[in-house]
Length: 356
Image (cartoon, rainbow, N blue to C red; front, side, top):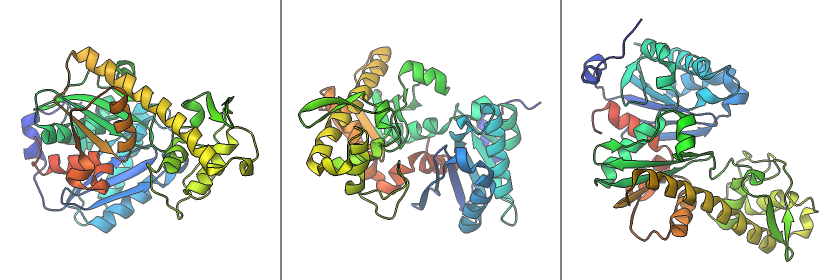
């Protein structure tokens, strides 16, 4: 039985190297970074394609040719696994397969929720410490960017929003596991792309009336933000509620279906008006969670760090709270692609010894 290694032993156990690959294995996306500006993000619905995970990770490793792999995860909660421990075991196993794809085999370390990098075997013996750990790495990057004693991180991803108090040393969490973080308000299950519209609102305005929406997966938050311009159009992407293009016109059709009317009867202007109401509801939910987290800490942040590709939602929530203080946007600090993969980027910097 392994004991968790002391933090001071981490660097000695895993020597630094120039070729680092940090992987963030989520339930809907795989993200990779090397801490030197290279980044990769791809949609990967783990609950559907879990059997392909070893092959896909191996493909990334073969392309990047790392000497060292460090990994964090949130995909262990996917319902293709019996429980979180089984999910961690499956993801670690896939990472071990991938690490063996280079010669010599890459060193592999797993990031824990207490900020340590440990061998795969240790992570397997402490699976709940390895589960859902990416927020911790990101918070360390945010704390470094904010450089204040009282700060706040808001990270809006495709599925969830993380809200974390930070100080000059790193994260100041109220809870560490997902269940506890949901209770505290630090983890909000609403995101910029994958949240069903019916999970955000029960009704929306259309043709001068407030109409109920169907509890169907006809449209997602992605459609709301496509219509409002918060997300760029991507005609080549079919990762949408109906498998059609990620464009404003297709988003209009998807949102119209939520009212059970003919899509042709809903103009782009009408769909956009409904999207504004949906965005307001989503922003209010995030704002309430921010208020709850700050209330638990009993402080007002000196600076707020915003990351992820849902900056527009974070800023809407801050506006609802009347926040006019300093906002640090990671996408402007490190670029939009790195900001989207910020946990992986942060983990790569940690592995290189460049982030406290």
